[in-house]
Length: 333
Length: 273
Ligand SMILES: Nc1ncnc2c1ncn2[C@@H]1O[C@H](COP(=O)(O)OP(=O)(O)O)[C@@H](O)[C@H]1O
Ligand SMILES: [Mg+2]
Image (cartoon, rainbow over all chains, first blue to last red; front, side):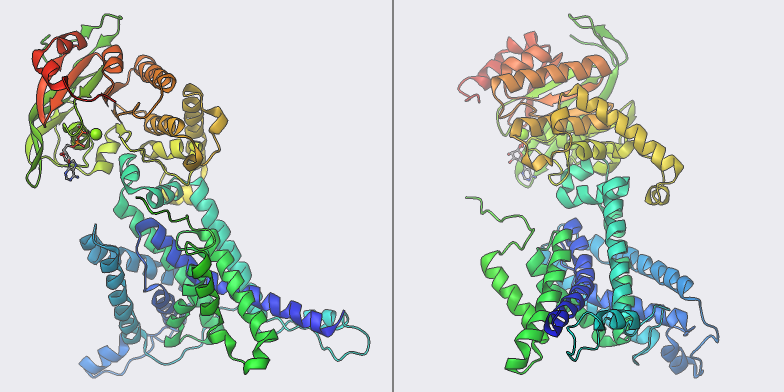
């Protein structure tokens, strides 16, 4: 095999894994949009907040310590213990569920039947509020998140693939980050679990019912408010997983909330209402931008990953405004 | 025909109609300046097929919406099973055993026929969510038992061939039938049907009439239905309420209503579809 071919395979694999991470963020958007028609601008910040909370709990940070110290003149920062990762993840999940409940109780409940644009603006407010709250609770310094997943290249893969290259070519093997592999496996598991849940449980069916028709869902006894809390909880859970993966990769910092921007082109591609769309859209964007950077990038000065996804999505919007899997929009006349 | 609320009666075809299940007392419903329902009272008895008829815009759908809680009347009382009902949300009313279909089909379009009817059993599923999430023993047994009921409904409505078809792809007549199936899924105490035969051809109407009669006969389900087609209404219903411009202008057996001068007036010159 020629080294170019092997490089291309490596690029595609890395693209697929990056795509899974994008899909994970897009998935959170789709869940809430399907169930309630709300475009939740805060999804990215939810991922950041979840990751901050996880690190904070894990390291035994005292929440609001700056505030407490400023008000009471104390100097406390840590409880002096660390919490095992799994327990910390569970506790963070509880925080996200509590958050889902509060959002519904304090905000959305008062905005039932409002225009989508009003709800959208409410989530913008929510995003900034959460960003501030995360800062106030856990501090604004960049934190390292270690959940015990292996990272770095796979030596095994490098050794094996190095042998595939043609005799005499300078090829030293494929580089795949183990963390990406783990992230991919976890994300795939998450999607499978969510799919099974929505297909084969009462609550899952209720979620789909609400996504399809509010009136009909009410008429069979489904409480929209209960479903919305569940949907926001699941979106919080997805945000936690995304936050862990991205946080472990890039460190937990405030720019993490910007991964939401990566989800936008994914949504344009996949449609706002389709879970398979979010996944396929994420993969196309991941592979597309890596391949483009690899093949065309060097000719035009590189750094194409910053904009390629948006251009691809725009092209898509022109030819298929409803996205890959979205329902065709037919104007009623 | 006047009965007191606990008396029973026997219909010409030999079925027994029991005491009052639901009673509407002096219901008035306004939308801004429009009075959709004007001071209407009537009752629905155990085991009967009760029709509500009237020209377009008479307020029939509004009445069903009051019964199932989509609309809240400004005046009047709703009595269900001998108790005055406090204002309730539609999903709470569903849990009291009232199921319905819609004038403009409201199915879960992305789901199969099977899942639509299964979702119709929502009120019948009691296992707590955490058990469902991991399919723990009771939740699994419940899911299996519910599947059996759903299969019975599918056989009953003769829709085996479309069990796994996403309902959005079905023709109109079959969608109406699946919607009836979803309402039956709840095994309701009271079944509300808003124009179950609208837009159907003669053959489909005959099928639907037969299903409605069979539901009533085999399961003893109390049914309130809205229908435009006078012929059908007279054939299948035990008692009829006639509405016009939000007011009640007649109430009685099909024969009584047919000979009521006010009803004849209201229907003269009204285009029937
Ligand atoms: N949600 C609503 N908002 C405003 N007006 C309504 C609403 N629902 C019904 N109406 C009005 O109430 C009247 C009765 O409508 P409806 O109950 O649908 O009649 P029917 O089912 O007999 O054709 C109509 O004038 C209709 O415009
Ligand atoms: Mg109507």
